[in-house]
Image (cartoon, rainbow, N blue to C red):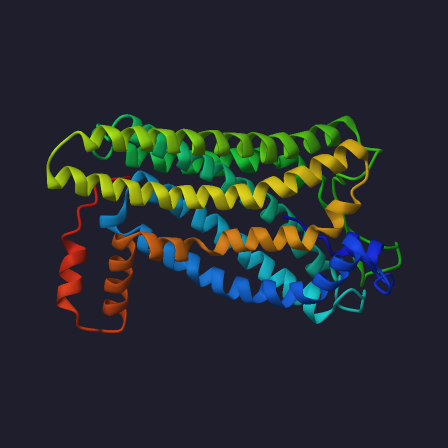
Length: 355
């Protein structure tokens, strides 16, 4: 996710009257995007903090929940940076280059915001891939693994994804710089970085563009679709195999596995919905050297990503009884609400039935 303000201004500023098609849509949505994004960030930031607190509780630490915690950290950082960006650059100053908008400090923040959101979104999508792979492997092996080993591996996996994503975007950090618009100006600064739309890129810049497209878009999109399909097929086979077995405990375990897997499939579907459209538009722009569609849809792409970053808590509450019980127990503890029955049900939850 990156700042689309300057690009959008160049194309649709003073051109919103009597426009049709994609231009008309971009003009309309540009007027409401800022306030919607701020509202969504104000919901998503505390929601992801709650996710982190609940998922890191001792009784909730499983391989999948560790990966989901990494996703929550990444999403929270994305939305925190976007909230500051939207308030200062979009709401306070709008599309005009007024005095105080592009000071050295705020231009440095904008450079930081672009690098951070680019990195954190890549981290989030790759952790989504890891989540689908881990769940697929768990169902395939029927969960027959030594307890605790998968937790440690998941922690290492999350750290590795964070580090590799940062390393992959090192060229972006290296090329990013802030400079005054003129030698005599100390009030207005601009950012210089790799421009994906430029035809005059150096070989190193071109290499980074393809790293961004292939590593940050194509590969994770393909992998998350493939393992999502494999997950559905494996779950179906596991369900058929378990149905042949007798016992209430076996059926209860199957029900829990199914509920957990369906929740993860919904999360995977959200990644697909948020990733595929922007990947298609971006590839179309690279192939035709015409990024107008990508620019006009920039705010919509940002909004879909922000929605994906903020809705996980709703999925957890809707589809995970263990998460709901732990959240309620935490609220009872925080606000000194007495509910012994609910608290005991949380304490006695079996957590090693699924990752």
